[in-house]
Image 1 (cartoon, rainbow, N blue to C red):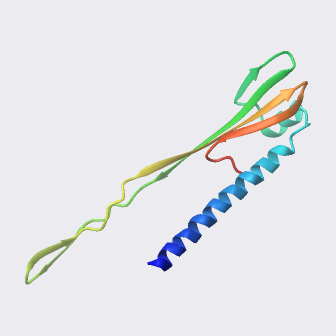
Image 2: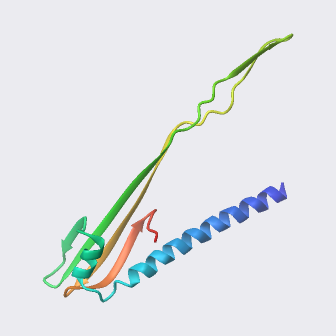
Image 3: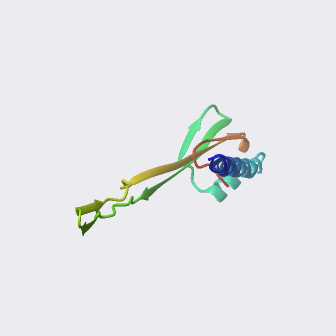
Length: 127
């Protein structure tokens, strides 16, 4: 039992560390945009999904990504067998279909035509 708990702890720890590393890599990628022009950003990332003008010199533009993954589930038929005790049935566990949505919104603050800040939110902001 201790061995199973230790194995589970190791697997979960590695998953957590890889998630942090991935987010850190995305942050590092976004840091390279500080000081670049809005024109360079839009040329590379494309037309923004959202835009908001804060004042004459400052605006925020954002890029949004969505992805839905559908898992079909598992519906194994029950098996029946006949022996001297009668009919015996065995039904494996059924797993219903499910879906998971991944999203990320990356927001850049543009001041006087140049990127001065960035931020992101969501469960799939990765490099």
